[in-house]
Image (cartoon, rainbow, N blue to C red):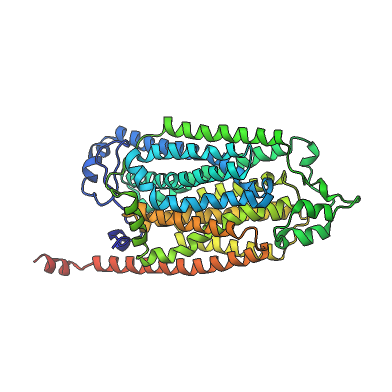
Length: 522
């Protein structure tokens, strides 16, 4: 049955082997073709210079892929973070994000295997990155006729991009583990940690760009508000934001003593938007060029030979594996919590009390902590294990949800505007590095189907969150987040304990006495 593999019965620290038919990173294959690995690496392992060269080659590809993603998502994520603030009319901004992740689900079920099979991992990533370029371009003139088609294209590009990236990194990690005599599990976590360090750094760069560009009209926009209308915040911001028109609310609560309308209620000028989106477009294009010109080809010959409809079937068959079903809630939560940050924290806890120009500055704290934590958690898993890291992320998120349910974002609570997103970034680093790596470890011999499931369920979390974005209050969204997180952690703990029990049983069965082994041979 799909999803049930030999790897699931191995000890957690046992190396997972992959087939590498050539001693070059240009052609690396994964899957059930394990018998040729030792032969393919024999000449490299005997020659220290070749071994060092191959290790450097793997690191070079990892860094360039990470850099290409950094450039692309500096543009895309920063533009996405501003959608609920820049394009609030009739919910256009959040609708575009919902379309992206809805299309992503369809894409994840049909496209990755087909595209990777015919053009390979590297060119799949190149073509997909080009699809992302259309999103900042569409924001030059945000309209239902421009932003929605662009969102469809981004959604179609996303699943092949992330599936190719995951396949490339896990394949490289398996080869690197053999070259360095390390465990594949540890290397996978290390590689994903490095990748997400770059990936989350894109938030820092993008938010710096948006903050200074949106504040360029007046230096006073860089001053933290010292005067605010309590009634306006108590009725429209934070947990009390029920998606009302913020401009109308500011006019309603405006006063000469403390004018609320100073908070960029009319939004940035067209020229400011053109400058911002022009920068984002250039960065997005740069990412595609880096991927096309700098990254080596990697061929996954044994992993998938199925067509797109076969992957759809395999994806659903994968859900026959109880472990996959139990990982659905925590996977969906990773989508819910990112959607909440993008759609609600940016609008309800930043734009509403402070102004849209402060979105980037506040999210820099989120991005910096996310990036640093991604690297730390990627390396820490080898020493402390997955469960303590998952538990740490859950405790932080639960504490933050409770805090947001009771906190009113008055501007004089300056520190909280930066501390809370920073903590959210630490928790997000857990979900983005550990869930993906966990899939790669326990479903190592069925990667494309398992990563398709990961993409589908995470995206469904995004879609549901953005679908009810304009219809319920922030307080209700926080309760939904809390419920999904608790369910997800209970299910995760069950999978983790089941894996440990299986591994312990396997170890005991293999630890036979000499007499037993002799009797077995006779």
